[in-house]
Amino acid sequence: MEFNKDTLKKVIKYVLMMVVVTFAALSVPKQLISMNDAYLIGFVAASVFVVLDLVMPSICLTRQ
Image (tube, rainbow, N blue to C red; front, top):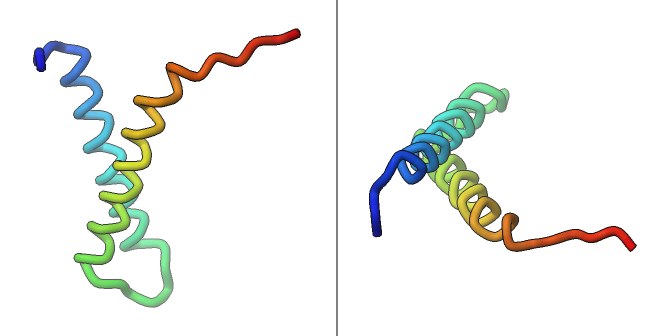
């Protein structure tokens, strides 16, 4: 795999998504959750984002 600017931008986007969701998981609920659970929620959200980012460009919607 070639590591170019586009790949670096995508990795930064995914890591930023994980950080934002992890922070939200820690700060939004009234009852505190463990740090491991927050990391897991962030990782799952970033993983779903990666899959959607890879699959969505191949889906083509056409008007008829």
